[in-house]
Amino acid sequence: MKEETNQEMRANWLSTPICPVCQESGEIALTNQEMLDYLVSESNGERKLAQELFPIMFPEFREQFISGLHPKCWDAMFGSFCDEHDDDIFMSPTIAFWMNESEQHGENI
Image (cartoon, rainbow, N blue to C red; front, side):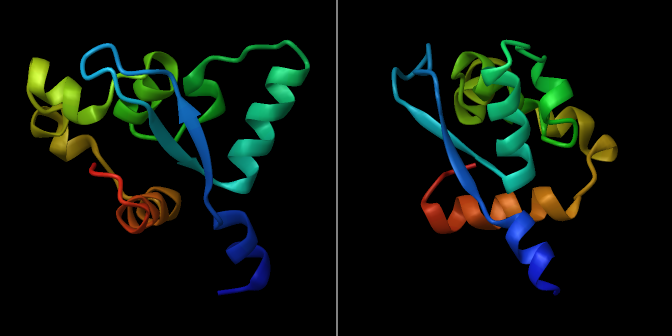
């Protein structure tokens, strides 16, 4: 892997709102570019939609970014999103990296 790719794929942990179900805080991992896009959006007052900021992020994690609702809490309330959409999910390098970083960081996804 080239050095630039390693730099772009480094995880930046962003705190999310308190989950309305379990009342616990959470974090999502962003690449350097995703974090930069988020910070620029916030500083310019643009407030872009989560799907615009993070187009390849799983919807469950975009929901956590917006409302704080953890994927495991969503599953406890409504059942697994992935069970219904397994054929629609692809594993991009960013998502694969994020899942690996989450496991190392102790996140239970």
